[in-house]
Length: 233
Image (tube, rainbow, N blue to C red):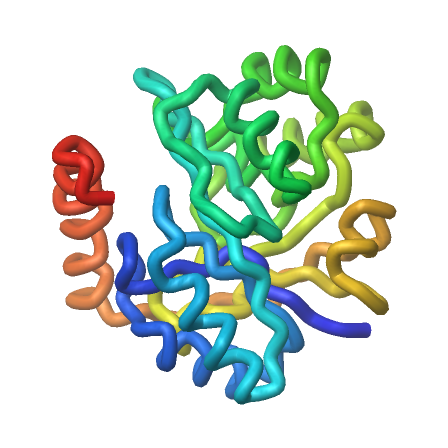
């Protein structure tokens, strides 16, 4: 079985590591595949893929797309060749990913936040209209136990429309958090996702230095929205 962490960020958005540092961390964690999914940009994706090839690491180029205000729900697009425009509806975002032949995946669902995380009612309406390729079941973002149980029940009841069950770290800190949650698969990753032959796994917690977390939060909550507002992202 191979091991993937298909949700990773770099300095191109609100991550704290360069492409080189991300690839080095993946090699140190003995991962077979990562997906580089910076927020609303693919600026670093090509470099990560090139460095990954040199290191014997498979890299999926993608991005984490922000949908329109006020929910600002996030959608992962994998196997993209060009960026997907942010600020569209959730439905149009999924369509734009699929128009490229990419995979549309819901990250960190059902979190107790009013933005970024897709909520049960919204997701139920979405899958009535479009089938997804996957959904994160194991992820490092905090989710209360009750909401996690709701997520697992929702997945079991709607597996055909939600696609593959996935695990991802949503890594922003490279060696400090990469691979905390991951996806086991056999053979080709894209085929395994499409055929729902994946297994989400969790490998335990690792502590990220508090000062590094604080700097990342400034990037995520202040710098990134400003770059998006001024069309620099």
